[in-house]
Image (cartoon, rainbow, N blue to C red; front, side, top):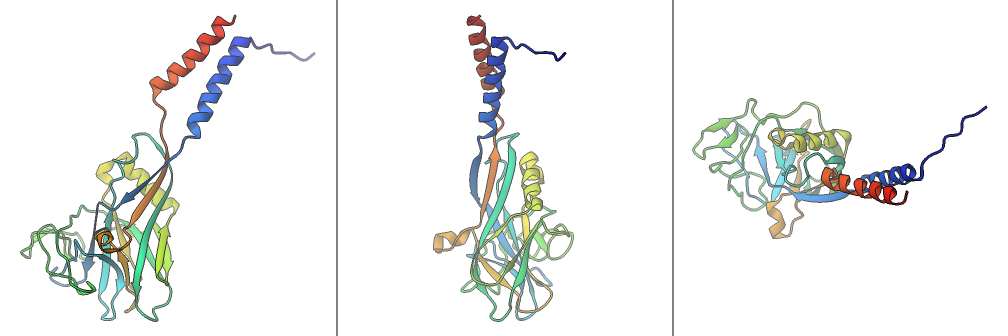
Length: 260
């Protein structure tokens, strides 16, 4: 013969209350949109004499003169995502505002930065394609933080220190908005949220296989002049406060006892 399990009404109600509580908390997702806290462009040069820490644009790829351009981006993830939250999705959006004519589709990738870096007040004129003299705090091709007088903290490798493998890659061609989103990027942001000391930002690396592949994107500073600032969107589910959850469960149990 089969065995019939008889649940006490109070136990059923309590378990139902707990299940309902868990359902509500698991469905509560949030979205934050962050602008870059700092960004910069590195201009290939043998002496680190070019910088762009406060200009309107970011560059990635190679110029018609076969000189590389690489950009840096940093977002303050830890201040926007509560401790212990489950980050479920990440998107980084940049506005492509200029390409070299006839360059075709070219990949642009995000790579984890591996060394700390800073930005200064250098602001190249006009199109910003040739850079400006570095000021104190600027990042250059040789310096992660220039002193503005030809010295400063050096990268381990000229051109910047970044992970060999890309966290996310997008093919670019026409002008407009482009969004990077991948498991690699998601894992990066989870890393930044869990340990803010590991958040050194990303390098934006274009196609450096040939001359004339450079892309120009709007920077965070360019938003004040009509540009579209880089935006990092993060979707996450907060961890419910233990005290609040306990109060709700205890209240459900108390109600079931009073009904006995």
